[in-house]
Length: 221
Image (cartoon, rainbow, N blue to C red; front, side, top):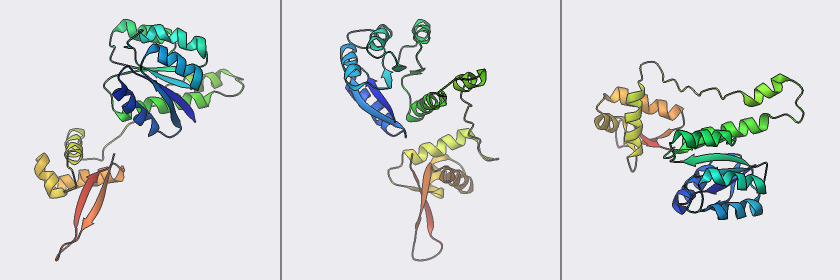
């Protein structure tokens, strides 16, 4: 289990990020902090493996805090999560050896991808390095995940169908989805069934008094 300390000046944002991390297998949030001083104290007390670090803290700029954190726990890893888009901030983070740099705002999948890659690299370090191949395996970039849609489906329409499902409080039939998106019922059903195969949606049958049961779809992720 990789233990995580979430550091963000906004306690509501810290709570959201904590919720994201706790949904990812293999990670456990052991605490949160809302300032640099709180982060240093929490690091000394909780000794996490990884710090999710916001740069805009009320008492210190995050990059200036990294040295203090490593003075307390030299082996701690840092993943920067920030709205700071300045090139110098990115370069400074790289110079200080952060494991990644994620710009706000971001979604759950953005964070999950980076944390899973961090876990992969962490686990790939052998107990004893015996060859260059051992090093290359650790430093190899992650292979990009390519989500290819079935032939005849477009990403643009898939996004519209997904949005229709997400914004529906209950569930949708293929006909209702088609009307919302502006496509045919047959096309809507193809996209809906595709999302079911990806476990992003689920289908339930609604039985009427006559005829076939109606397939109703609900977004699950």
